[in-house]
Image (cartoon, rainbow, N blue to C red; front, side):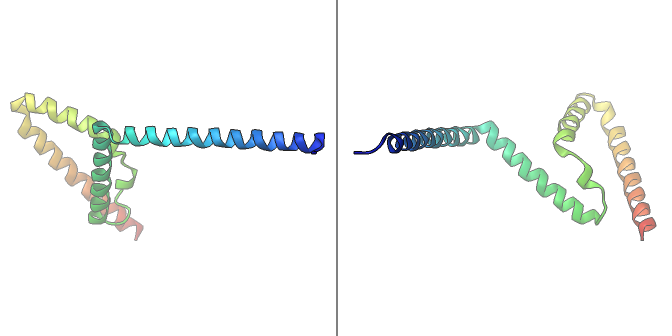
Length: 122
């Protein structure tokens, strides 16, 4: 026959095992829900956009070179603004060519500043 102390220790161990089992079941349920959420079309689209933005950022970063400044740009924040601006411009046909000209001039100015900045660092 087991003593009261041994029975109390067994009850504590049993309670601990029950709690660990509950935690395991909850973690398995959470993982199941995460997988279900990850397979939603919207989540898949967000993942694809994140991959594309990462690849684009890496390619443009390599193209411009070290210290190009693209690592500081948050494309996930800038992309909705760009899409909104392009949508607005597409509705105003008269402004498309001037907007393209301004964008080219701005890109040329940024490229010139980046080259100047990298030349000053050397």
